[in-house]
Image (cartoon, rainbow, N blue to C red):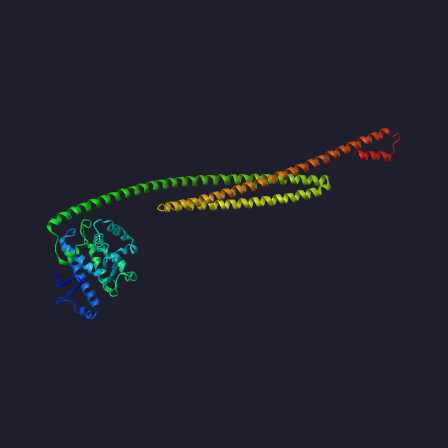
Length: 461
């Protein structure tokens, strides 16, 4: 058994049974005596007070020390001893091949699943070659978490999952009660301390006996610790250089990706300009087609009017053909109206496309930080352009069909005109034959009567 006085109270440690009895000083708060009937409550109260005094003493001495703490710093050694007792309190005894043991490494290893940031520390502890026992790994984990200034955060994640801790701790353990939350809150103050601990070369599997006995490290062991610390710093420096090279490679990759995205953005802008030019050209072509259609329609209407007058003056028998032509004209007017409506729809769709392109360009300028999402937007614009191009092709196909209909109508009109000309020519031929017959009739007749003369005259004129 060994005794050690720390900040106004006495620690009585029994190494064999790993139990502590704290003899309180006269200045100690009397409320702790309320838990004397419950041994677990008394132990929690004693451990809480020990943690308070140890953390407070470590912070005050570290601030007065004025430099980075190392493994030989006595208050730091006392702090790890107290934390080990707090974490061991109420641990369930597990049976193994070598007997019964209480391991801190089980709950501390579980922090990796609750807090992914702790994965680096757990991996580093597993890779340390000198550690042979779970207790040594737990001590290394505590030191690395303190150096990382994440000890309070990791333990806070652990105590919030009492359903998982119940697999490792008995009911009434510090980690399952309010005292554990208070201790974790006190650990936040340790973030002001900078510690540089040599974990790699330190014998953490057996050093607890030295901490319990309060024995310092011998001078001949300091040289080995310094060399181990130097090797650890060199290894850490090598890892940092590797990390820097890796990060530099990632930066170069990101710069290349950014350059590629900028080039794609320029190509997209050029495509938008080309599409705008094509849109303007298509609008001009549509205007020309509309003007030609109107001129052709006016010419057709004038021709049809002339033909109708001719039909009325010459033959009443052509009324049916006139009605047919009029019906065809109405169909042509209906087709023209359909073409105009479709052109209006095309123009509105092109205006919507122009508006969409303007909005897209504005969105590109406003959201240059989101270059990754630009590809998706460009794909959508391309899809819209392809759809518009397909619709334009369909419009051109319908326009060709309508031009074919107009050509057929013109061909029918030409046929009607040719028929009229043939009819007129046949009338002229008939009249000429009639005159010839009349003249021959006059020459052959021996006597002419007034009635016959009049008949010949009527026929001749």
